Amino acid sequence: MPEVLKAPLVVEFPFTRSLGPVQSAFLTGLRERVVLGVKTADGRTLVPPVEYDPVTAEDLGELVEVAPTGTVTTWAWNHEPRRGQPLDTPFAWVLVRLDGADTALLHALDAPGPEAVRTGMRVRVRWAAQRTGAITDIACFEPYDGDRPRIAGHDGRFEDMVTGIVAPARLDYVYSPGRAQSAYINSLSSRRTVGERCPSCRKVYVPPRGACPTCGVVTSEQVEVGPRGTVTTYCIVNIKARNLDIEVPYVYAHIALDGADLALHGRIGGIPYDQVRMGLRVEPVWTEGGRYPDHYRPTGEPDAEYDTYKELL
Image (tube, rainbow, N blue to C red; front, side, top):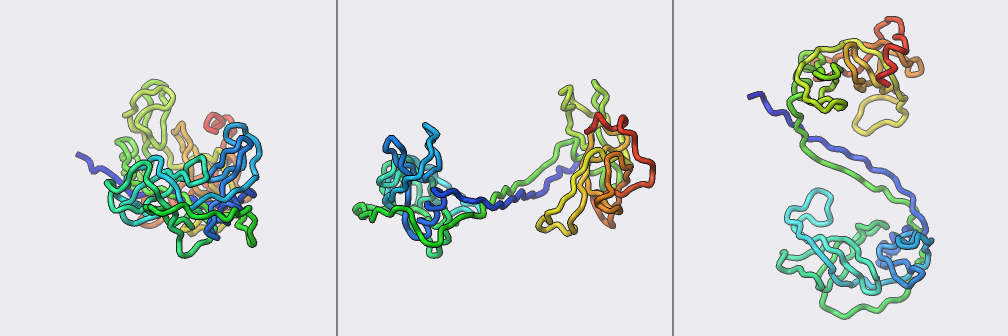
């Protein structure tokens, strides 16, 4: 039996988000240990607050303070916390309707076990020691059996308002290619590019997918393509990616390898970025010990005629 390939992969995209007046006040309030909601025209108080009424789509802006105590409306036990979650020990995800609110806030509840959690239980906010104006300023909720605290009635006006946040998004997973892609990856180790031909439409797909995306039939006939190809479309990258040691600007292109009916993508090198063009003929450049082409460079051939690659745009 052939070796089953697998590799850990991380998809990460932190991005900066600007805040409107309602979200700005809400997060600034958390920094100051104040929980704010927003009042709707029919008298409901929404926590967390939103800029528009989800029922009527009306603009919302009347901020009201609610209590840091509330009631669990539903919950689920998290027996194995993941990296970046609020707590590093098992905890419950809970929806909490804070006192004075009509909607529930999702957060973590620090509890010794699932037997200690129930719908209807009373909880309160545990504030983070260091607060910056983010939802993580609420470290978690904790069980609470005391009285409802008095509310000062804050109007949502603060000094040094939070106007933007960095929202990280990350997915860690293990990828295991199927039969077709495993054959493709193994062929690259010998500096060959192998696709598969559809038995119905006869198109050759690179990288192969194990089935024809047009006809929906299984593909198994292997076809070696390239190594040369044609640039069909491209873009100039001007933002340097983290952990990628390539100076900007550089060109990333779709390249139709000779004999293939699907363009793959690769970096173009060996030519100034402003001289890359559609129809440019290129060939792969391998580094010592590389498992795939490092980049593609011009072959010196005349540019391909548009009609030869227009169906691959």
